[in-house]
Length: 79
Image (cartoon, rainbow, N blue to C red):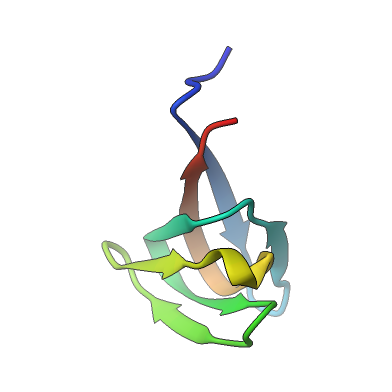
């Protein structure tokens, strides 16, 4: 089972292969390795992340794309 308070999703991307991920409401993406760029689908906003850095994803994005070579964890409210 999971924890009902929040959902944590691991996203790993490689060079030249972006990963699209839907988000439900507000979310936080935290980089844990490599260098990645998180791009919001709704606004087109981009944020470069390195290990230890994070970005707030607002509900109006709907989904994000993670590109570059690295890993991020995306935390969202539980369902």
